[in-house]
Amino acid sequence: MQQHMIDYPLDVRGLILFHLAKTQDYRWVEPFGWNNEFNIKSITPSSECSKKLYRLLEIDGSITGSTIPLAITIAIRQGLIRDSILLLRVYLEEVVGSPAIYALALSIIIDLRRQVIPLLNPSRELRQNLWILQDVPSWLIPYFIRRFRRYVGSQTITIISGGHILCPGEKIWIAEKQFTQG
Image (cartoon, rainbow, N blue to C red; front, side, top):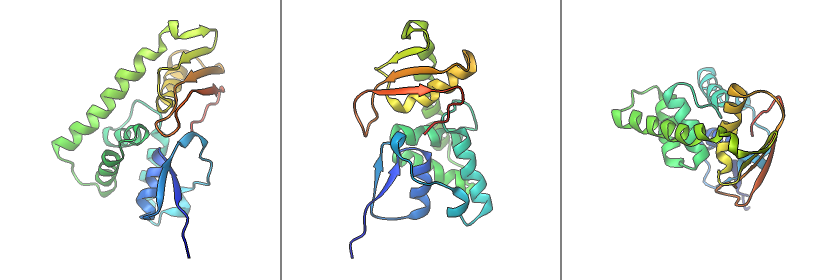
């Protein structure tokens, strides 16, 4: 009997599934089209573990938060799978990470901020509420949208971005007033 390969989105949901399932037959897929059911409470036995994993989902797409959890969500979106797995183990097992682990987490966060902060440049807005970010990989767009919401406003915007590392090409985003990321 042949098992089929399991698709994990290359974001924090996929990292959580990967961590919990421990399956050998999997592949990482572009997260923005992945629509499988995802419910932490149904897949995690420990309520303490559930709380921590739920916290990761809450901060996904943010550029502020506790260092290790924030670095986990950023690293997996970038495709830094080994780093995100290492940081997830430190986070879930509540071990005190070495200075090198903490430095890794900080460097991931600082790198993201350096990439996202300049994106709100008004010259990137082609016309009102149409942002041209074709040189920006799609994994950065949820961070851009959160920053836009915080500093500019809640209006619906359209964004043209670059592709994802697992799905090249351009992407068109319509961020409604109540944008929820995928």
